[in-house]
Image (cartoon, rainbow over all chains, first blue to last red; front, side, top):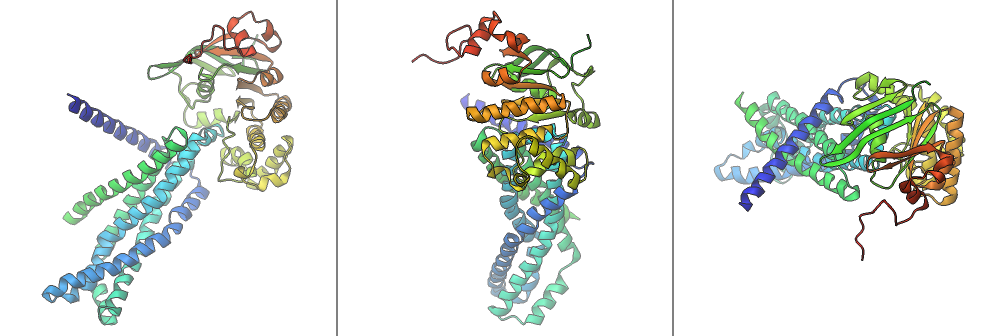
Length: 257
Length: 257
């Protein structure tokens, strides 16, 4: 009986959480993304979410591209297919690793900081103070973060894609002995527009997930410093899991077309 | 006699099985200063949040200037909140903004005033609470607790509201700074002619700023009368509270060693 009670409780908690995320999402979209639009806040968040994530995303992409080139070279040389390295690096980065790794890195960097900032604002009554100053916190805090993340993540990923392919190129030409012109030719010939856009669509969805999870957990944090800490952890973990799940769903969706 | 400026009747609010407000009945005439006293956890803050609409009461009516204000939404709610100013217990200053922008926040965001003009008003209001213009450039984290409270007060009066709420304005301050804040509250309220509700458990502060005093206990107003008559209330609960005795009709849930 005890086991059943535990399972029941876990399921109820999960359902309750899903329900409250859905209600938060409703307010976030209906109130947060309708006028009045705080342009200054959106630009500020774009700077924080997008621009300041560039080093992290760039480094991640660079090393991933390099490692990918090495691995694929190792695998493909077993059946004399080394010429595939350039094209598979490009494909792997743009379709899969670019958006997913950028999404996870930004979830750790930005999701955590959104949850910590809004969580602190909640426990120190700054969010209530916004209300008393006739400012809707969904419009002032949540909306700008969602918009900024959805707009900047694809841009980040596009830059990351370029850097990742460059990482593969540098490893390929410097240590694997590829001809520089042939490597680039291979990449350009093989890559299709769809490969890139499917990755950018994913990035936009991941940005949405990161901002919503950060805002939701921050908004609902309670109980001082410990509560803010919990909110931060939950924001990152839930965003990371949702990103991986959404990635699978989107890949099968975009793949079946 | 005209209807009171703020009128609560039969306001109830429960959180789960915990009944926080049990039919609060309260009337504050225009231009009066009401101080609500009561121990921790008796529903003082919840009452203010119900009037502001941050929390929705389960039942009962709340009327401000003759109009029902329960369940306002959208533009009507924004307009309603424009009439309020509130000083929070922990000041609740926005720590990402400099002091002057904190004070000017309601003017810039709530009323779309030009930043330069709002800044001039903010500097003027800072002057009224005894802070020089140079303080405007600092960030809230750089201020002492007393200064933060004064900035919070300046923010509460910045838009010349007709109603101001003070949530434990002197808690956590030394007695001298507490008296400075009390004087500022009296001055500011007199200048604006605002109706105010303050909640506190500091009797020195209550005597200084109140026209009327009401005592809340277990979610009900058990006594209300002019501040001068509080020593002769004839109410054992009030007597116990204002003299700060552990023995009396109010029993704290403390286990005897």
